[in-house]
Image: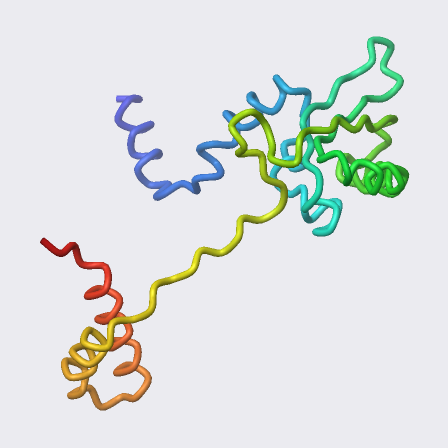
Amino acid sequence: MQKNASRSKKRGAGFRRTSALLEQKLRNAGETRGFAITRLLTHWSEIVGAPVADICTPVKVSYAQKGFGATLVVLTTGPQAQMIAMQLPQLREKVNACYGYNAISRIRITQTAPVGFSDGKALFGTQPKSTTPAPCPAAAQKAKTIACEIKDDGLRAALAAFGENIMKHEKRS
């Protein structure tokens, strides 16, 4: 009888957020690299600011054996390391504000080649936006003729754009 009651509780809860499903797995993965608070990884650009986040990324937090503070290791390119070195006190304050206490006593800078690791895929900051192909005039005209009977202007424009997008991405044989 208890199995049925526990099943009904689970079903009554509805959908769960993805963050709730992945929270424990992210925490375990972060703790293996020394990150007790995964927010330092997930919200790096908000914590240190966009200009700093574009040129460096956190790699590891290592704790001293006697508990006198931890060392944060950040990865950056060679030319940017000097810029980060000048901002170390401010960077340490911002990271400690994330933790809520003086958890980080030292920040160590690790440099890498400008192209990244051996496979060249280490990028800092945001990815460049991909360019979208130019719309096909025939697809745009066909979408407009299909949506021309709609009386609401906003809805007609939205349906025309939607139809154009569908026709543009159709697989052609």
